[in-house]
Length: 328
Ligand code: SF4
Image: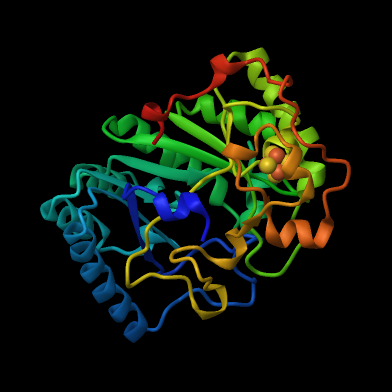
């Protein structure tokens, strides 16, 4: 187990609800697979979620992320949120594809129930790209309407995220502009984790740098903060506080551990998130704050022309860093 995983503080725990998802994102579910759970499975999962809330509170967690596919499809979610609040959670975030937030009264009920933040992905700045990734016509327009509903409701923060994919690599800047136009409170960009063994949408780490640097130059021109998650410093090409490559997995407790095939020896860490250091890391100035490369990328594609980060090579633009206390 890596040192930082052993030492991680009990910050955010996570409950994963999977009632049904109207999207079939390229990196997630094959189109042929039905995402509906049987009534029995769903009842079991709900019972687990209820038990998990109590377990997390017993262990002292006060911050929780409710995610899954898609938690908003669960009509009892407002009551579940209220229950979490009643048990003493002080900060509640819902991670969702955003589609059902297009229903303004449902969005308002969630906000009234006490959701502090919503995390919503945008894969482009128009339906053409976003809906191609989600493989669900209308998902872009619904998510944008949903974000507007949350912003006009006023009481919850909005964290918008995006992924570098073959489909999105040339529209990252447009997505970034749209995120700010929609009034996001926080945002981040990340590479995809490959959990489904399909690499057709994936951009290998050794080729990601040009797209991240182009986005960074754009953010500098716009003077808008940007942040990256799970992007190694050598992929960006310099040492910078703009990226965090020591992201910890959320605490999943006893009830929501990765499924059999994705389990690792590290609690809460699925196989597709494993990282390793390779030879060049021994000569890297950023090695002390980096977990290395994604295993299923580096073993498949290698490091190409990536070089270790030099001690004298630090990026400008540190004013673009979103301070940790402002992150959602
Ligand atoms: S430690 Fe390794 S993976 Fe991390 S930035 Fe340095 S060379 Fe890249």
